[in-house]
Image 1 (cartoon, rainbow, N blue to C red):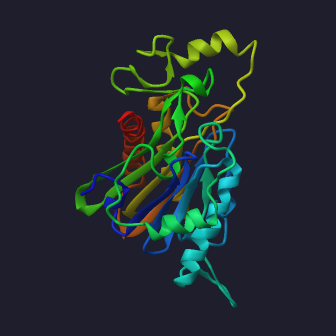
Image 2: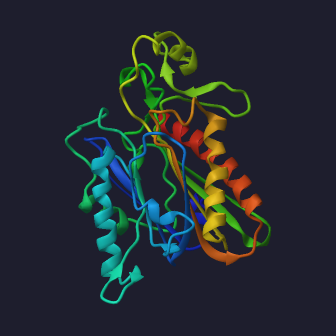
Length: 308
């Protein structure tokens, strides 16, 4: 067990990044077609192929998930993921071609490094080449390379965000795994004590200001200008329908609210994808409840790793 999303049988993760420009992308690749669902809770999402994940759509399977920096520009990295999969004959078979279906979502990291450098098709392709079944790095890797949290007063006093990942094995061999890119407007708190773990740094640099208290004082005078976003992929080897996968994504979003304060703002594009890459029987309520716990854990792990 790697205590990562890769503990789900058949799931591989790959990262590619530009350390100088502080941006990158992360790809989650199942080794079989996976039933997928999505829940979009933030009000500033940047996405691709999200519409096909709705329960009433024709195609029920996807072939990968891409998370990227670069804001809307970073969606171009999905082209590289599609090229990688097409070369291997992976995709939805039509009468004339195989079409890989790769839903994607992005975070805003343009104000961290070089805003002129964004993940592109080559970055997405390289992330696929790097994908492996024991990838468990956290912090400033892949799509989390330029992620930060606590940006209510600007980037200058923000704390590092990044990638967090974890998993849990349940009775009967069922595994639920989560990978999250944490780039929130608000701070991240300990779910037990409520203490701020990462966020808006205070003037002394030794503690943090609570974001909601800051909002009470400044938002009526000066609207916040930047954008953020936390993205999660939940994977399991439990067999789920499209409707059930969507429910798991909805329940998993509660993990954001447990540890990000505030969550799901107008300035966040918070999204949870869920992947069912197996056939084991499980109660959807259990999978959703465990996913919620793991999402909260992954967010905490991301900011702790970002400090290292």
